[in-house]
Image (cartoon, rainbow, N blue to C red):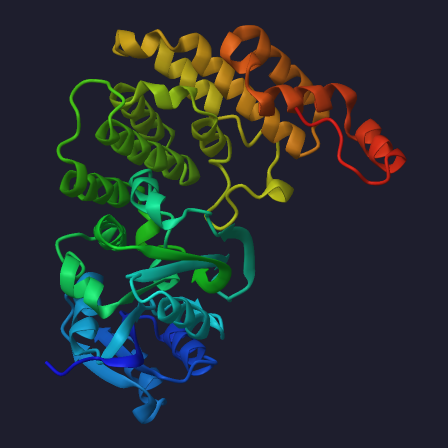
Length: 409
């Protein structure tokens, strides 16, 4: 194989029946301010008008057709055919912002020892209209692998890797039918320095009926990926890396089942999370995620569209079900009090942030009364104090102090 061009970026676009979107993906690459790139579109046995759409771009695109073999196989075909020293993987329904390649290649050229770089991304709807959710997590290279074990927060188009990384860690696992990108990012982050750009440089489209809207498939593949990286799922509760990784996987699936209206499976995932890693019940982030669980993908955590306490309603009933279940093991039962306190605290903070001060006061007061550990949490106590004072009084105090913030605990 000839030596890859050390300035060339190969953008691999796998496509299956995305005639409506693949043209936009190609155009987003053609609009790049960085000009040293090639575009490889790998059509994975489409039966719609994809071929006609792709053909319109002529020799600006390397067009590869193959019988349907799945997303991972299509990506792998493109990577094997790529001539560039850098590999970008852009799904056919997603888009690059114009400065994506220029910004990320510049970072990698400044740090030749780094294996890749990831950036932030914005969720958009099927019409490419921005949704409220933006992901640009501040995780530096030394902590990336451990952070990814907590759950995948990268999307394919947000990662640019050197070709040498794929040569070392391998390509996408064709046995996986979801989470195959997470598997590659874990392999890469475990062996290479992966840089972080805080800039929002890609758009991730939310489509009804996509793979990520099938919670059962996502759960099965999450567990398969973790089995590859941390071993078999623990059979007893604990706090190891493996316990936490599997616990967080069940948490992610619990939230997805809430989103898609399956409370019974959501409970089963919560219960398994608690059985594997009971301590997650007492983490504010666990309760935040479930408290926002009714928000659709692309709007998770958006305070403007969050209605409290209604949107947080699944959280306390799920805990009631867990602690009322005779099959719940004793190590989990012992966490009843702190788990409820943490849940009330998380709901109280969410209520305060949505300007429902009355609900925030009630929820936070109950949390503080219920568990001593909550009383030592500065965020909880600070929010409780501000809720007691009220938004209007705090706004008046800030004006009186010349705009300086007040009331932080």
